[in-house]
Image 1 (tube, helix red, strand yellow):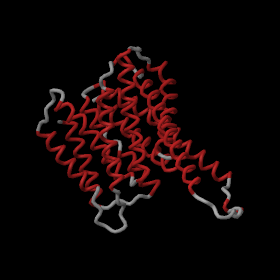
Image 2 (tube, one colour):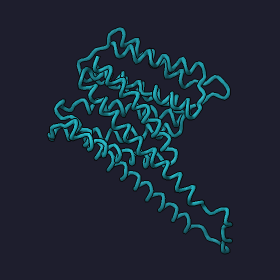
Image 3 (cartoon, one colour):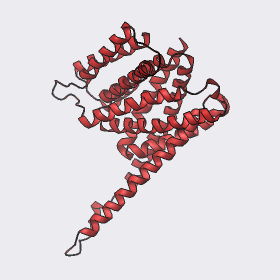
Length: 311
């Protein structure tokens, strides 16, 4: 019961973080938005450490650091696919993949076996994936192949994160999550700096190859960017990313407690309910329109998650 409450609560909070992260990624780019969110999450974890406590051991810090690598890949891919959109379609796809991955891991590597409910759950989940990606109506949102690929990769990585973080000891508290955020922030800012540097080098190389036959006329005043508007947009984007990091950190604490309170597969599948928060926010805030067959796919996704939780 405690696992269900913690995991489902964490899932809803996580869905809100995904929505904020997707909006921030549209303005800042997936890498920078994720890096800023990681720093905000680290500050949140450090603030929670004296309250929640935890023992520092090399093993738990190591697992936490490894989860930071996997989590950085997962969240970067997730925010990238949500930035492409539609959030209400791609978010459930990542959730299904993140739910199935720990169960397959337990079957292939561990000693867990699927019962009839598990087999039905996976079958329904695959049908749900097809339905949410099928758009028969004109004007309904249509996911791109690129977005679908990013969503699948993100879901696999999120499932991997669950597997890695479950290896930590209960006595470690939020210590592994602190290590997670430190590694994530370093990796994501390093990746962002590398991409920015390469883009600058390519731009300068292209400029050197262009021979200007005559001096370019000065740009008209209208072409100059307006500082107030750009500054306001940047502040909004940073605020979204920071809020995303705080909300995401809260969700991760709840999900970790849910994993430690019960079975990994159950916690992971119930944690996969996070699209509910994203879908509701996307529908109310972004006014995304979903076709009836896609709503059926989303409903089947919830049914599949419930069956997998009971399996």
